[in-house]
Image (cartoon, rainbow, N blue to C red; front, side):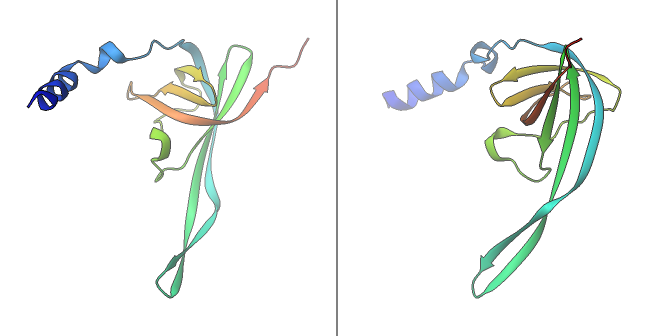
Length: 123
């Protein structure tokens, strides 16, 4: 009975108490591309099924760095979600290692992988 009680108490702690503070930066969505990223073949019994893989990429400018983030609309691995963004629109971005957190047009925090970083040229 005690383990059940401990589990219920831990589950009742609000998630915002455990939330990590992010270092948000103002950013602008400067480009967008969506298209075919290839295909995958999966064995099913004695047959093979091939399915297309679509990829969406956004170029987001924050400070002196442009980040290229990627999203596979149907993939939910690693907690990644596709953001709802507007080209030339303003957003906020927080970088955590090889992932970015984006505040999208729905005001939702979306975690997406960074596939490239482009620094502004030195003047």
